[in-house]
Structures are given as C-alpha cells and as structure tokens.
Amino acid sequence: MDKRIELIKGDITTLAVDAIVNAANTRLLGGGGVDGAIHAAAGPDLLQECRNLNGCETGKAKITRGYQLKAKHIIHAVGPIWYGGHRDETEMLASCYKSSLEIARDNKIKTLAFPGISTGVYGFPKDLAAFIAVNETKRFLQKNKYPEKVTFVAFSDEHFETYSKLLD
Ligand code: ADP
Image (cartoon, rainbow, N blue to C red; front, side, top):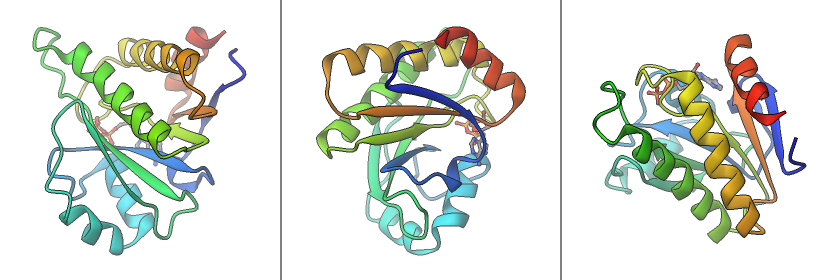
C-alpha cells in the first residue's frame, strides 16, 4: 500500500486529523448519515458557519472549522445521487474527491480522512465509488505534497474489504 494512504474501519467523527471530509448535500445545512453524525459531534456553531456558505454545487466542496471535533477542519463535499450511471455520476464523484484534495492542499492540510462519499443514501455502487476514490487520490498525491496522508474510513466490514482489495 502507498505509504501516504491508509485504510481504517470506524467512525470518521472521532478522528484527530487536520480535516475530515463530510458527505454533504447541496444545501450544506446538515442531513442524515455521516453528515448528521458530523453536525451532531461538531456542535451547533458548525451550522452557523455553514449557513454563510450559501450551499455548494454537486462535485464541489467547501471548508469550515471543526468546532467540537478533534479534527481541525471539515471539508464538505457534495457527491452525486446515483441514477444508474448515465448522468455523469462517475465524473461528479471524481470531481468531488479532486475538489476536496485541492482544498486540503491549498490549506496545507497534512492529514485528511474521507468517508465513502455517495455510498449511503445516495446509492452509488460501493465498489465503483471506492475505485474512483482511490484512483483520484493516488493521482493527486503523485503530483502534490499536501495532503501528506489520506485515510479512507470504511463504516462496515464489507466496505473495508472493497477498499483493501484496491489498495493492496
Ligand atoms: P451520501 O448521502 O453521500 O450517500 P451517507 O451519509 O448516507 O452519504 O453515506 C456515506 C457513507 O458514509 C456510507 O458508506 C455510510 O455507511 C458511511 N457513514 C455513515 N456514518 C459514518 C460515520 N460516522 N463515519 C464514517 N462513515 C460513515
């Protein structure tokens, strides 16, 4: 495995990294899944900062502080809803990872953690999403010094296995 890429199974809200990525929606005002868990753990000041961001387009990302999280920052990335694969979903998801990595680089973030963006309620196939996540990240790390280290956070054993096959 690439020394700058790590895989863990667990809850992304507990990680003491420079930034965690949130699988947000276009309104950036919280939601279910990992988004809800991040807002709950970060506290209400996060919502206040998010209100000033005026939402975010699908395939893009925006950064906030981490508030009560151990993570210093949160990069809110908006993944695509899976409609079957004919609505540019793969390009949008790739763009989501790339935008998050660019924001991390521009803010000199050393350690960054990603959840499986779009693989929950948004219904993106987990194996294809993991392939895109790993591919975009590897390409970006080859060309950039920051982030120094990227952690993929799997929330289930199945998701962990999907990533580990790609990272071997
Ligand atoms: P989306 O709407 O982008 O699909 P979800 O939050 O529904 O976002 O799910 C994204 C992924 O995050 C799913 O694979 C889900 O299992 C995972 N997930 C949910 N809660 C957490 C958490 N606390 N830490 C890490 N991953 C999580």
